[in-house]
Length: 180
Image 1 (cartoon, rainbow, N blue to C red):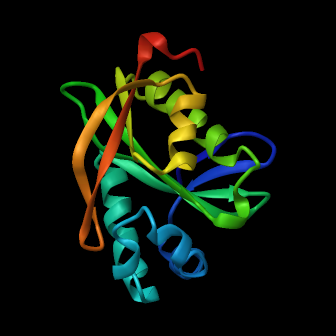
Image 2: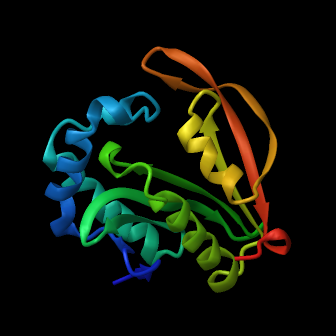
Image 3: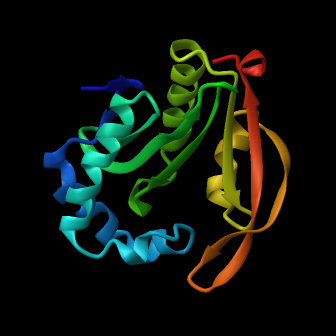
């Protein structure tokens, strides 16, 4: 099983089939909070939906095409982070993440993204990692800004959220610029 120890408090674990109820509970308890920025939340309304998606994520990892991992803070599932579809020819990927509302303000996501970047650049040998955030999602945008990503531009109407479009800000980090 893929595990990435971030520090004494945080560990990233590849989701396993038995994790589906914990994952559902995390999303369900934070539904209103997460729904503001994540378009898939509304459609994930039953535990069996998570039970059926975890094997797809495991296949993605087995094919060396990214991963979805739970963020465990002091042993408790508090969020998710992953690399979405690795473009091996161009040696690039993007990071996606979310965190429970009650887990905000402890540096959990900043430390988790930092560990994923170390993994992407030093273990996988990738050249570029991108993060896309809703333009008005200040908490999500603070992560790449804190970690020294370059703000590369805006994708106008880049994502639809519940019938309305919003702009996305694109951040990029190159291996040669990452200090770890």
